[in-house]
Amino acid sequence: MENLAIENTDNNNSDKKSNIVVNQKSNFRRGSVELMVLYLLSQKDCYGYQLTQLIEELTDGVICIPIGSLYPALYKLIDAGYISDDKRLVGKRMERVYYHIEDTGRERLKILLEDYSATTIAIQTVLAYHPTKGKESKRKKD
Image 1 (tube, rainbow, N blue to C red):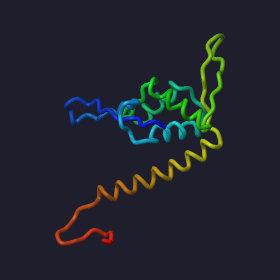
Image 2 (cartoon, rainbow, N blue to C red):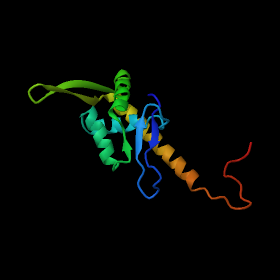
Image 3 (cartoon, rainbow, N blue to C red):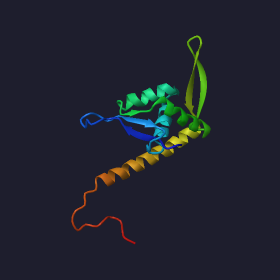
Image 4 (spheres, rainbow, N blue to C red):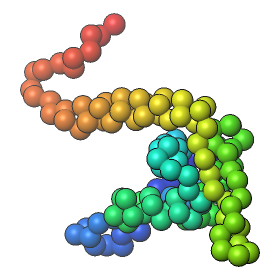
């Protein structure tokens, strides 16, 4: 998956919640969009716009993925065999492309969830670090 990025859209107001707009030109942690998409598809089949809306809704507007940034990620997941797509008739004439997670996608999701958990714990450990005078790091020096 290509790196995606965070763009803080909060202009000078530290009291307001920041919005994160994910686009292809920023440095969002690799795998975050992949993780969210695979997780949502593990719950139910969705179409592209529905995925962007769910992510925005579930994060209370904190994470916004423009549809133009989501589709390249979806195509890469299809190419990797993690998801498939199928066209479904909506109404009398309109077709909508729905995405479905495959067994390989469920396996990939499990790996991403384990990585996410380990990374989150590691970051929390770093953020909890408060050195005291004279104390050394827990790691042994070589």
